[in-house]
Length: 80
Image (cartoon, rainbow, N blue to C red; front, side):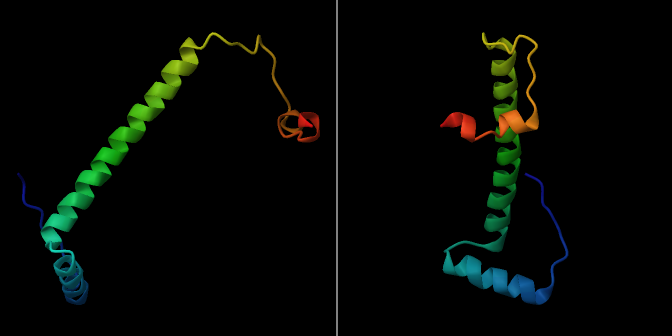
């Protein structure tokens, strides 16, 4: 595991230590958890995008070259 050193305002650190203590944790563990979530979120988003693109490429439906105008796409009266 790598150690990360970052400059932090003393008052911000003090407040973070109080919040971490209230949660039964430490600032280091909260930062580690945040970074893990950040990395996982990015990976999850990439995987979701890839799934959507893959499914759209293999979808059996087709517009058969038809395109729509903005007005047609947003025509709520046609739905009634």
